[in-house]
Image 1 (spheres, rainbow, N blue to C red):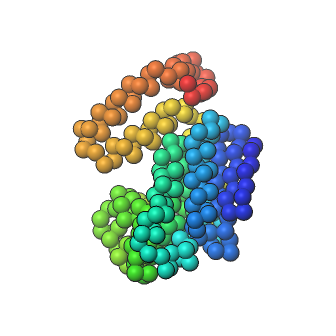
Image 2 (image 1 turned 90 degrees about the horizontal axis):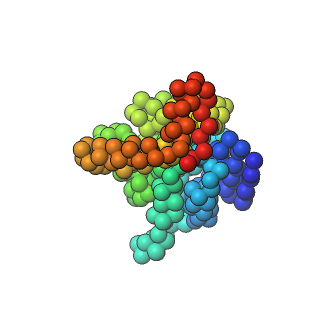
Image 3 (image 1 turned 45 degrees about the horizontal axis):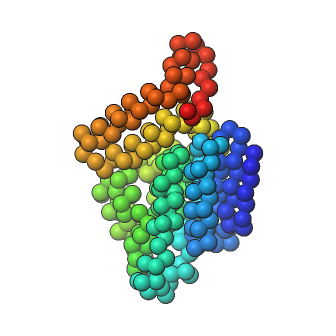
Length: 261
């Protein structure tokens, strides 16, 4: 096990290939300030390149995932100042991570916190979780993917309701409309996220990476173009040792040992 910690973001890499990234600003309900964004980008870039890591769990506190962006940092900001911050580059470190990312969400995931959860590949929500994009109540709108990822997750009419009213969405409702993957009791959220991450980490890394890449790349393409990408990725995996090992293990009725080769 390896642990890296700063005051605001903690990273732990377990021997099973699962890394945990925990945001820790309890006094600010884990609000995303510049420092936290930069640390998240730094850690996700490092985890993307770390061969030991096969899946990542992203979480906040037991009472709050991320309550939003730190309003104090932009309350009086001007447009050019916001542009020059280029926060899209920091978010991009998460977007471009080739390894599966599982959000473990308890409590509030609002504004930037909801957007952060939607940057992940799966969302495990505790029963207490509340999701929302309340930027409209500040005279703003979501600016880190909240409109575009939301409509792709839940469709036009639910996305419009959530973004236009700034309402809170409970965990059961989020599951019903397709915003989260699973809902569990609060004390099981992180455990369940780790269970899924460990399951994925035990599978062939090249196949996992290709599945993630193709699903995300194909989602916005016409079906025929997306099927071409899927087919090529499928064919490419026949050049991997893991594919040969998986087939041999199946035929020999034994557990496979996948090495990412």
